[in-house]
Length: 337
Image (cartoon, rainbow, N blue to C red; front, side, top):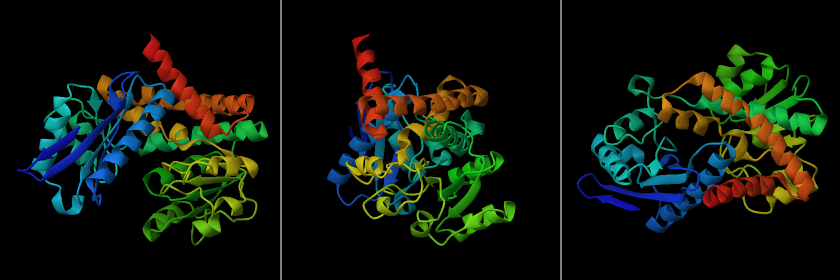
């Protein structure tokens, strides 16, 4: 769906990939795309990714995504967000929106004034607020499952874990790891983020950058929690870790990298599986948010991750391919039902 409102300057794309499992659920990205074609392509790719993420999270939702074209620092206004909300409303519930890059809880509060299919709102407006807590918890569950699969024990005690990016999600992940007895090494481009960790946890080791982190001697697990594309031709050959499990989206720079990881004997926990805690949380808002109910669902990421590793082993394929097959199977079964 192409959306334009001349009065407010809104130009947006809403893409629905699948509604086989239920209404499409996915965030709204606000970004200065160079062309409309680029925005459409991104919306379509992101919508597809949400279908797979929602299917493996056990949610009764398909995948969708919206992108608003423009620099949010320059053109984002209340009127523009309200106009966007009206376009979401015009889909009659087939698409449920939330936050993404360039949009925040306060923005969703505005969008929600025009339609009831908006999640990621503030607690004051009936939402759950920041989803970082459950995102980090889900990644931790995926990490525990990875340890179980590789070492036969789901604890991270005594393991050395490198976390690249200690912002909102990474910060909480570090706390889980330390509580479980792991040795933690971190890096972040933002000095204030690093300082927040070291002030609270002086036992944490800091390295200069991701390049240094992936080469740390004795590293057991690498957790990319910042930008996408962290796994590529220039990083995978030099990784010392035996497991990759992190919160960042789109960690595989392009198709084929998952095979490079297998060849190096590195176990990869698919990002869209382990970082699903956030979407589990926003989906729950539609039923009256309950944190304990969400946490129970996010805990199941442990079992889902183990299921993916078992499928990968049985079929002789990388975990990323196994995750896709399981998601596609669930969507296909829903269409036949």
